[in-house]
Image 1 (cartoon, rainbow, N blue to C red):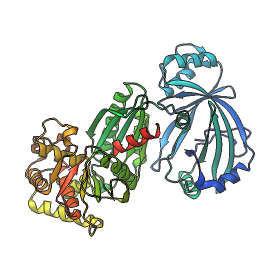
Image 2 (image 1 turned 135 degrees about the vertical axis):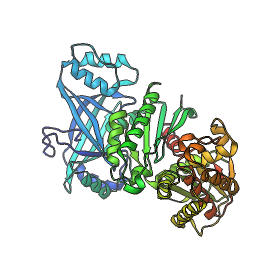
Image 3 (image 1 turned 90 degrees about the vertical axis):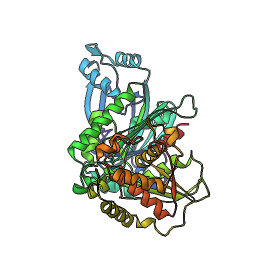
Image 4 (image 1 turned 45 degrees about the vertical axis):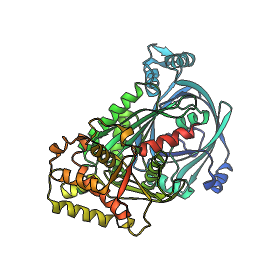
Length: 508
C-alpha cells in the first residue's frame, strides 16, 4: 500500500492499493538512481508512531489524524499489500481506538472517546512492549518506468536511517523495478520493523517457524542481556503441506488448511509467553507452488505472521551454518545436506567457508507419491525408487569424496532415533549420532515390509512420519552412496537454528 500518501504530492494524488517492497540501510547497488531521486524536492513530515515490540501494524498520528494500515496480502514473491483501515480525527471513538489497539495486540479500550493524550496514556499503560515514537521523514519520490520509487531519510530518537520503497498496483512491475535497482535478494522490511531495528528494540525472544513440505518446525530462543541464546522450545508438527503436489503442482486446500491451523496453534502458544519476534520461512513446497500466495494469505489472516519464501541456496546456507557449528568434523572437506519433503539442499565446503551450495527438487513427499511408498511395497519398487533418485541426483556425481557427511532434517533425525531405539526423542542423543549405510539398508527393509500403521509401532520413529520415511531413507542412502562415503553424522540442528543464530547475532 502507498504508506505515505500526501495530498500535495503530485506523484500520489490519492490512496491507491499498491504492492510494496521496502528496504532499510545502505543502498550502494542503486546509488545513481537514488542520486537522481534526491534531486527532487523533499516532502517532509513529522509523525508520531505507536510502535509495538512484536507486531508490525502501522499505527501513527499524522496531521492530527489517527492513521492505521494493516498488512492484508503477501504475494509469492514476498511483496506486501498494506491497506488503510482507519483515518480518524481526535477525539476518536471507542471503535476507532479498539481497531488500533487490536492491531497492536493491546486489550480492548473502554472509553467512549479518546483524545490523543488519553489514547497514548492507555496504550502505554496496557503493555510494556508498546512505545510512542516521534519520527521525522524527508522523502524524495519519483516514477521509474511507471513504478513509484521513494527514498526517505528517517530520524527517530536521535538516530537516522535510510529506506527505499518501491510501489505499484502491478506486483510484477514492482519485482522488475527491484531487480533493475539491483535490490533483489534484500529482505522486504516494513516501517514498524525498520524502526524497531533502528532503535535496537526487538524482543529478546525469537521464534522461528520452518514451514516445510512435510512438517512445520518451531524453535524458540531467548537471549537476555546480550547473552548466549538459550533454546526454550524446539518442536515439529507433521502437516504434509506438499501432499499431492507431485501430481498437480499445486497445494491442496486441505493441506493448506491443516498447515495453517498448526501454525496458528504454535503461534498462539508462543505469544502467550510474552513479546516475541516471529520469523517464518517457507521452503521447497512453497517455492514450487503457483498458488503459494493463497497459503501466505491464509497464515497472515489466521496468525498475523508473514511467511518469507526463501531460495534453495539460502536454505542451504542457513542449514550449513547451523550444522557445522556444533559437530566434530574429520578432515577439511564437508558435505552438509538436508533431505526435505519437497527438495534437498546441498552445501560443500570446509568448517570455515562454503565452496558451493545448491538445491535439487528431490524430496520425500514427492517420491512417496510417485512410487506409492506409504505402505508395504516390493523390493523391485524400492529399487526403482532408488534408481530414480540416483538419476535426479546426478549433479552430485564425480566430486571429491568428502571427509565428513552431515545430514539434517526429519528423515535423518528419525533414522538416528530408530538406530538408537529411542522411546522418547532426545535431541541431545540424536545430535552427533553416526549412522552407517548398513543401518540405513536395515531400516529401508524394515519400512519396506510394513504398512504405515505397522511402521508407527517402530521404536524411535515419529508416527506422523511413517508414510514418508521409506522414501526419505532411499534419498539419504543415495546421497551418501554417490558422495563416496559409507556413513553420515546426524545433526539435530537445522534451518530454524540457522535463522535463529543469524537473527540473534544481528541484534548483538
